[in-house]
Length: 195
Image 1 (cartoon, helix red, strand yellow):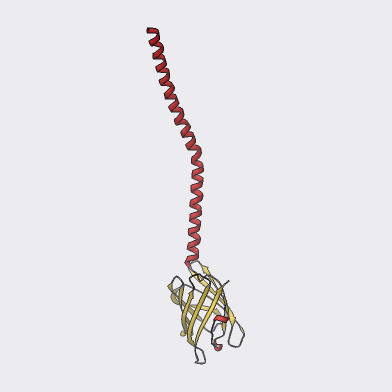
Image 2 (tube, rainbow, N blue to C red):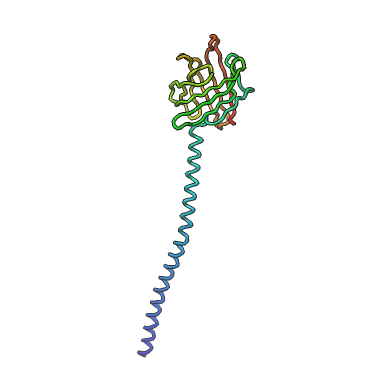
């Protein structure tokens, strides 16, 4: 009887130790699986975060200024006074805290004209280089898609108007009212397509 009890006790102790070791092994196996899976999960999380940040950055860049880029005159949709000439290409470039606007076109006699304006969109007039009919220009932000424009010559207002980019970013419409050097009043509406 004692011998049987001893065997039974031995079996209980062995079984108990076996169960403990099995539990430890199970924990070890689970921990091993966890750590093997974790690097993959971390890489996935990093990739997803990097992708999200790049989309946000790209969105911020495009949303920041829809005027940026190259614009070509759409003559069929534009109405310009002959005495003012026309701007065939306008290029907006970002330069740190300023923008650069490069204009190429023809004057009232059909001769080439070129102008470069660099400045801030703070409503103050900045000098224009080149042979444009004005010698300075002021840009003021109205909203995300619109600038208020004031062209000046010799310190006097030459023309005023607005430059508005369509919601889809494909079209830019410029309306300008002013007076030429000859004293003739004009009202221009020029439409540009994004290149």
